Length: 98
Image (cartoon, rainbow, N blue to C red):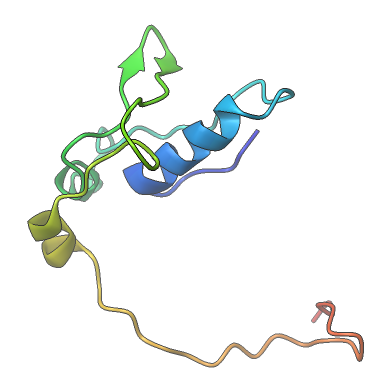
């Protein structure tokens, strides 16, 4: 079950992964803009994934199957800010428990 509490963009990506994963049985879906304070989710895509009878429909369009709304993205998404991640690592590069 892919964990997806994020945006309609990640929902579209998850649906594509689900469609080609034989042992995928369920997809976490919080709705794309249905919850209070999440209206921005409806503003960042022009064509979100369709929900039909409790099933997310796999889009047929190219890529991950959605069209982004450039104006909605500019309005709702913060610009990228580079930051240093201070994750403790083992000598071999694997993540250490902090």
